[in-house]
Length: 216
Image 1 (tube, one colour):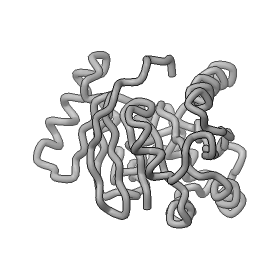
Image 2 (cartoon, helix red, strand yellow):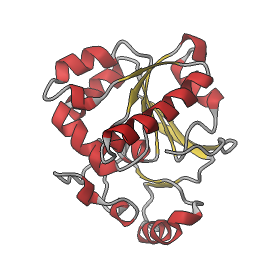
Image 3 (cartoon, one colour):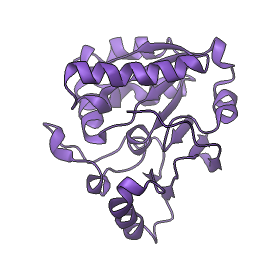
Image 4 (cartoon, helix red, strand yellow):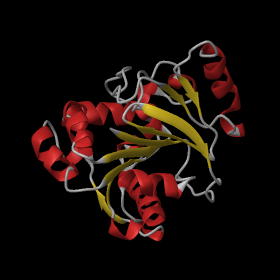
């Protein structure tokens, strides 16, 4: 199982290409946008295109895989995801993301997809969702944006991920989350220039360069 979980964008590209085993020009990415489901359709589309453009500028071939298009269709979704080399799960509201994963059946097939060799990569909400729980994340993201609030993570990793540790706009909420997990050996705290890279249960935090700030 291969995970690349960042606070913001791709701070360390070499680590990602090493996980995938291919250079960006040879890599197909399934872009999962559902952490942006709380936006109005036009604004949501703008946010998706920003991240798609960012990945394409790095050389990746990107296909948007909107979980809303797969209501209760896990096998169809699994087939689509396994055509790609990696997933990129966008940031945004993790409660919207978790809700979409439940409704599509993503949560039931993602382990099989990763074990088949697809890299699970994502930022912010996309990192949080891969861990054990979303409890505490409500201090920085509103669970009420989701119609059905689910608190469990996908448990792809035994860790609890806390992104944006150095983000001044989220400072109060982030510091409270960090304080609540100060004695938790499984808590992983990430600044916006850091990423958690995990391969077959062995993981580490890598520090790269903070990507240029983009909206979304």
